[in-house]
Length: 273
Image (cartoon, rainbow, N blue to C red; front, side, top):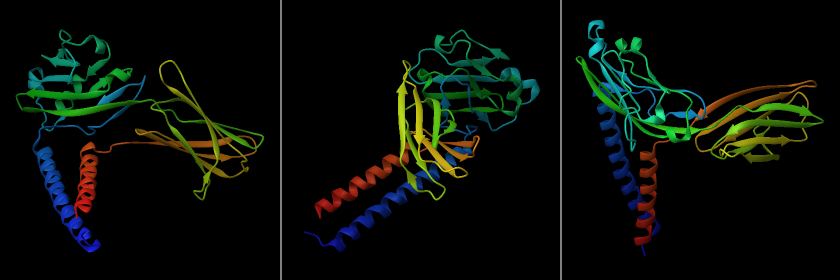
C-alpha cells in the first residue's frame, strides 16, 4: 500500500502532464483561430425560443465593391438535408433550402463588403438547436467556422408586493429552472416556488417570499444550465422597483471532459497505489 506522500506525488505528476498538454492544445487552437480567415464572435450562442437571433460569421478580409457579386455564403446544419441559407451572385438562393428554415433566414448583402456574413434566424424553435457551419467563398479569400446553437426560454420576472409578501412571476423558462432568494447581505432565504409546464414544455415560474420588510432589497435568482437571471427587487410602501440582468453559459465541453478525465486518472492512480 503506497503512502499518502506517494499518492500526492504521483497525482501531481499526472496533473502537470495533463495541464501541459492542455496548454499546448489551447495554444494550437489560438494560433489556428488567428490564421483562419473566417471567424465568429460567438460560437456557443443561446437563443430565446420564439425570438430572433443573429449567428455571427465574419471574413477577416474586406471585399471590394466590384467583387461583391463573386461572394458565396453557405449556411448548413449538421444532419440536416438541404441548406439553411445560401447566397450567391448578389442574391439569396433558396433552391436547396430545407423547408424548416423557409422564410426565417437572412444574410445582409450590404454588410458583405466588410466581410460580415452573419445569419439572422427568425422565430427560433427548439428544432433549430444544433451545429451550424458558415462557409464564405470569395476572390479575396474564404473559409468556414462552426457554431453550436443552443435554445432556451427565459424572461425577466415581474414583482408584486402585498401584505408582507413579495411575489416574482416569470412567464417563460426552459429547461426547468431553480429559484433562489437572498437578502442584501447574501443570506439565502426560504421562498416558495411553483413551476407549471404548458403543452410546449415551457415553465411558468411563480415564487413568493415572506415576510418582507419595506425599504429592503431582495435578490431573486432564476437559473438553469443555460441561462441565469439575477433580479434586484427593492420594496416600498406602494410598489416594487426591480432590475434584472442575464448571464449565459459558455462552458467548454472540451475543458469539462479534460477535467473529468483528469479526476478519473487521479482516482484510478490512487486506487492502484
